[in-house]
Image (cartoon, rainbow, N blue to C red; front, side, top):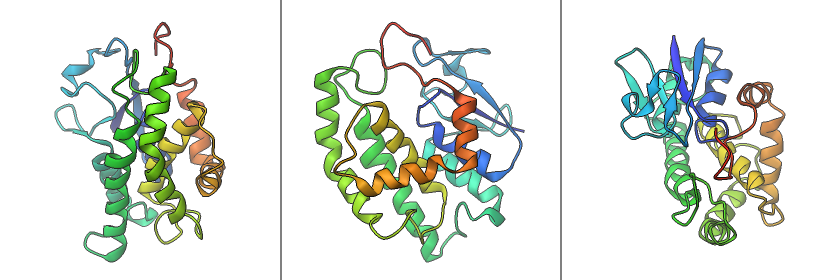
Length: 214
C-alpha cells in the first residue's frame, strides 16, 4: 500500500487529493516541517531532500517531487483520466501545466525572506512573493477564462497542484480581485468530495507562525 508523507497545507496536498480521487488504498504519515521529524524518526532518512511530499511505493522505492508523484498516481488508475496516455496532445498539455505550476508558481511562493517555514510570514516577505507571483497568477487566471479546469475542461492532475496555490493565496490573505477565474476554480475544487475529505483529514495547516509546531 502506498504511503504519502505530508504536512498539512503544504504542496503534499496535491498528491493527497489525487490519491483520494484515485480510489486507491493509501496511508498517511505526517511530517513536522519545523523539526523534520515523523513518527518513524528523522524525515531525512525517508527523503534526503528533507521536504514533502514523498510517496513510498515500498520501503525502498520512494518517489519525490510533487509533479512526478502526481503523474505516477494518475498512471495507476488510467480509467480515472487523472493523467492522459503518454505521447498524446492532452498528456503534453498536462505536463506543461505540471511543470509551470512547479517552477513558476510553487517555487515563487517559497520566500527567501521569511521566518521559520516555507511560506512568507512577514509583511515584507508576503509583499515580495505577491509581486513575484502576480504575472504568473494572471497568466493562469487568463487560461481559466472560459473553462473550469486547466486541460480540456476536465479535472486532472494539474488541477490538484493548482489548488495548492489557490489555497496558499487564501491562507496568505491575498486578494482574489485580480483573479476572478482562479477564485471560481478554487470554489469548484472545494466543492469536490475528495477535496473536502482531504481537507478534513489534514486538519489545521502547518502554522505560518514561528512558535507553533506542525
